Image (cartoon, rainbow, N blue to C red; front, side, top):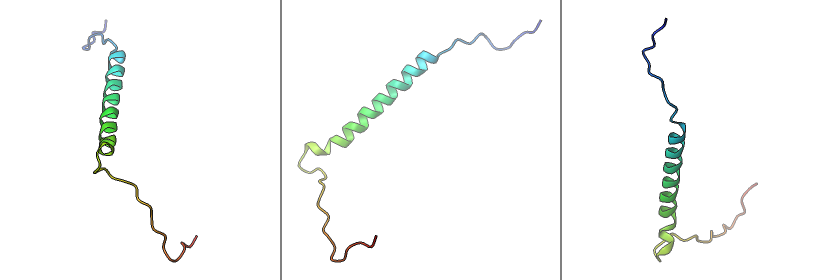
Length: 59
């Protein structure tokens, strides 16, 4: 008769999956807010047209 030192382990897969999902969504929302925040004000970064150089680029 073998005696195991480890107790019966219950699977925590649903809890772990839910925790990872919540952390993922939370970080995604936080990053989204950080990216979209400057566009609300007038001091946000704006895309500017690139000036053409006199010589065309060599392909």
